[in-house]
Length: 110
Image (cartoon, rainbow, N blue to C red; front, side):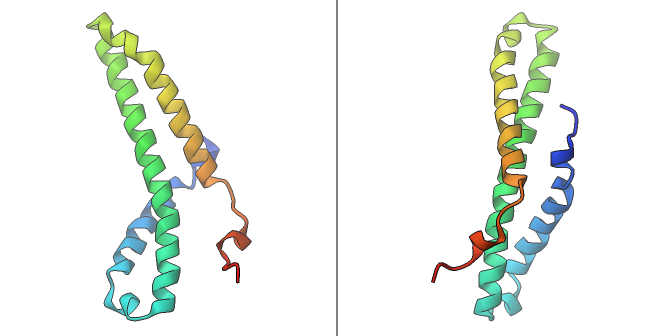
């Protein structure tokens, strides 16, 4: 699958996920409830991106492997349509997660 413009920001988001994950374990963050809440929210947001990216990566890898194996064993060719659907669904889910959100959504109701 070719890289698309929608997925262009994925690399920096995954790097930020790792940084925020490390910040969650920082004693300074743990000692500040407001900071912990803010970092925790960002970690949850980025966790959704990471999970969707992992799903897409796995689906793409499975599809590529099935295509390679289908050249040697036709039984693998039967799996290709389902794997293509899974890859497309994973891609669409990731694009939806990466879509801009309303900043008001993160605000407390009260």
